[in-house]
Length: 345
Image 1 (spheres, rainbow, N blue to C red):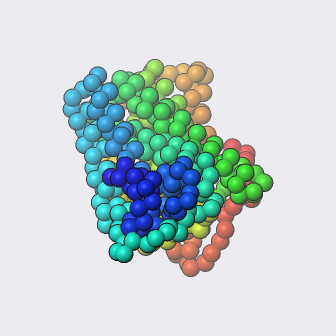
Image 2 (cartoon, rainbow, N blue to C red):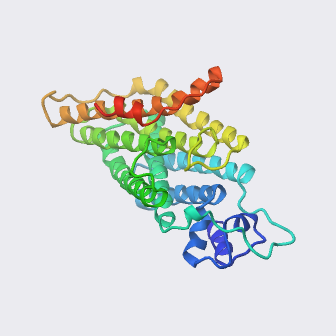
Image 3 (cartoon, one colour):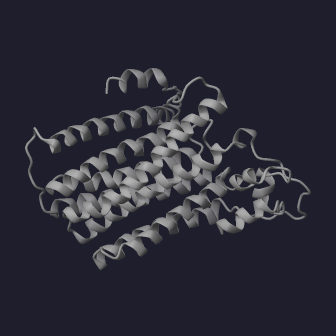
């Protein structure tokens, strides 16, 4: 389906409403293709394509996994994919037709007519969605009620790949904002920037925690929880960007139906996984021990720093939304708050 949409863009098929709204026949081919994901509907199709791609990679390269664990991981990946496919079908169909077809398109947003669009969103989605594999491994381990050092050995490469893609996506986005928007800096604590920064912080903590678990069989329960929280923050970022609750240069147009649907997905997967964690974590075997003054102890201290930083960014991002929902008042939490609280960290 993504290939079909990209072909419609490449061929300037303006009978497709999505193509008509975001393309023009005289655009260079690179902008026609990147325009495929320069809008909400097309970008969600790319999101699901990448999710399916990661699931296929687990199926192909997971031959060393226990059969039950692999089946559970793929089942969780499939459920996430099914939920977002349903989201696209019901609220974000990119194949709505126009009859009669317009002669010409409305053109892509000039800000998006940049090579940054070819690099930034795909890298960001590869990072966001890549953490779904870690999430699925965590849920699968909780379902089985068994976890050991080999689990960390299986999860760490997937975490590293997702983290590297997300790092590249954030870096490219910062550079793009610097030269395209002319704000005079690379980072502005914009809410949508924060939405990508939170899973990056949690993913960094997960990488370090997985090292301790793999080497010392320690921090088992904490590492499981981090794997759940990292992808949960990715889902939260998806909700913030696409629900219309945030006002940001990066956010998509407001649509309450989309926001409600994604909120239901968040409730299902985040709430369900945390409930499963609460029920099954106590049954897992205790982890190994290590000396506080050691490499592992330093990594634990690093985890404390990263989780505190994540919580700080989360509070600063969500507090204005919570205040408006509860009292109707509006407040802006920007660079001064983060410079004061995040700076010392």
